[in-house]
Image 1 (cartoon, rainbow, N blue to C red):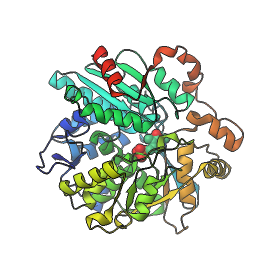
Image 2: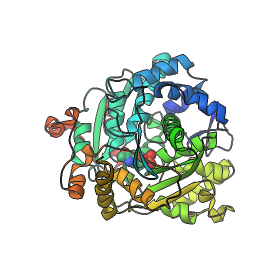
Image 3: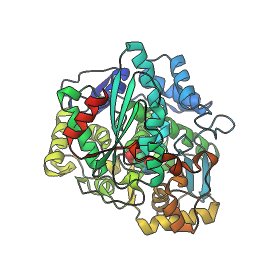
Image 4: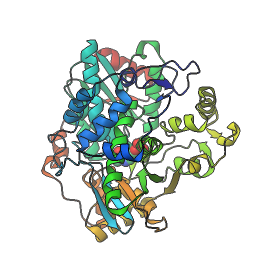
Length: 472
Ligand SMILES: *Cc1c(COP(=O)(O)O)cnc(C)c1O
């Protein structure tokens, strides 16, 4: 299955492996298959049998057969999701267990990996795939990433110590939790370079784009959420979640996804397009409601991101939306380029300007809702009261939105995208106590110690270039 850039009118094809190492396409577009594989009910049933590792390997093979054999993918996924890294693997090898909260509302736990965030689900396989491909090519790759919180430690944990890779990770000086900073700082050293940018997440993302457009740094790889490897790995937990719920409660089902850069819910969209019986994909946002407005009105309008207590959702634009946009604009790269250029120039663009119904997202099965600080606190307390689970503020945003949906007997599976241990102060505010820490996370802040774990820079591309040159 070949991939093309969403903005390339020549439709130049690349292999799965090439897209993994490149991240972003040279024209600024995102890699996406010509057509997604389609599965009928029998094929979905067959594919969903077995352990999580087997499901991911089989699914991944549909996308990546050109670059890996099915056996190689099984080995890659076995290393990515080993019990070492996912200590809570339950019987039957289920690493994304679903539980009922109350009535129609369920939680699917995507955060049982090494850094307690759902980013592990996609980044652990990405690290293994990259390492495999680079070894084969006998080349070295410099990677530049940007994180608003969870991507940083998850990427570093996935790439730490892998030969042939150096990772430069940008993070905003403000907006991350102590725990997140400590997790990243603890991974500094060797092939992992942590860089703290005086600005916000969007400034970090802009720096990445800026360097990629400079010839000297055009070969930089990416691990941020636009990498096709990440999206295609994430499709698997929708199959797993669906199977767990549908077996007991019937289908179709809804997923409610706490969203930022639109990577997680995009994987759900792909699962749905492949034939998985998903009724609705509901995007939950926090106060940064760019995606909510886009889905409800068809207008994509940039806004300065405000810092909230669900910081991984603090975005002013959502990079991965471009892949759904590609489908909505009739797979026309000229229209996509024009749309994205309008957005970049004017900070605002509407489907209507492209002869597309402003309800296009709703028609494709998306829904949305907004959750604010007081909602988050209430949702954390509510879930604790009704089922005993202490959730994190991002997951709480999904719960808020799910709880407002009509109760109609269709299961609403809320994605649990981080563990509460990472956001103790908000949890304490909500329920008056901090969540219990597993042993592996005890005293992590104290272990950080030295300030030198992060290199500080202004949001200035020249400073960043100097650092990358120095470490290359
Ligand atoms: C990254 C992240 C999100 C947002 O996911 P996207 O794929 O960027 O939409 C939500 N919650 C948590 C905890 C995250 O780390």
